[in-house]
Image (cartoon, rainbow, N blue to C red; front, side, top):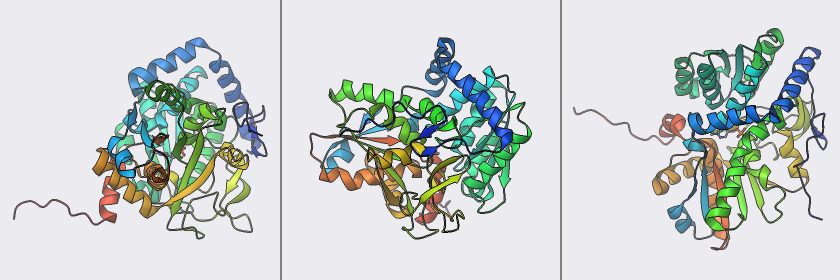
Length: 407
Ligand SMILES: *Cc1c(COP(=O)(O)O)cnc(C)c1O
């Protein structure tokens, strides 16, 4: 049986099979219903779609190229490798696709204040950017640890006029930032829209974010059909919450010949507390509004996570991915910190492209798999973002020398 997975899900309650749904306090039920209703209307409104298309093109820089990585292809000696260049978007990652969609929705709903959580800071920067553009007040919640390892993005958000609130609870990373954002939202519900940054959380966020990100796959599908006159054999994307991956995968779900690989953060190896690969040792649970795969102990306590890339360092994965994995429509694997850093360096040296550490996980998986493929085959790797934000961190990790002035 070929499984036609996904295209008609979620159901009206936001379920992807046993995953998804809406697990929130009473006070958030009404705002989520209001958001869902407005989103459903907007999706049918040619004026909304025209405006979104306009800003994605004129402000964000869409469409992004589907670029044949010639030297990488030659070096790996297997399939032809194409890079979907989301790294070329304004603000440097795919996050702006979703932030732009949601700010236009917020404006329709008459909100004047925007809040968001951020891990690596890319979603915070994207949100601060669209808030500045439309003149909204903007508050970004960010774990204190992440503020430190992504200081550049903290400065960017501040320069864009956002207030950045460092969150010092718990592990001081993304999960705690989401908690704070939800607390703020409950308190300021009338004036405020919460721009959630990935295909996660209570319904309608997972489906809404997916639909704002599917432009990646819609473009890639058109581009590969034009450039190769055929569908790709394999799609590869990194999976944090899962928005860049589902954005690429979704428009290909009905194409049975197209295999898909999601790459999670293997950190320092698959041991408790050392990684963020939810499909390696995770289990079913509810966290921050939705039911999905989580890293938790036998008492349901959320485990510590680790990844060299802040954007993949989260204990849960988007519900649609859990569903697609159960259906065996998408395969999930992981890359370790070391593999990701190697891929980061290698892509810079042989293609002239420094990827985000998140995206480098997808590149690492390509480096591993492509040599076993046939030269007639075609692979698309989603380059979800660029690596500028990670340069200082990688330089320190590899102990690269800093230039010294003449003595
Ligand atoms: C945030 C981020 C990710 C992870 O988020 P997803 O929702 O899984 O896409 C991946 N790559 C980059 C560059 C990011 O900024």
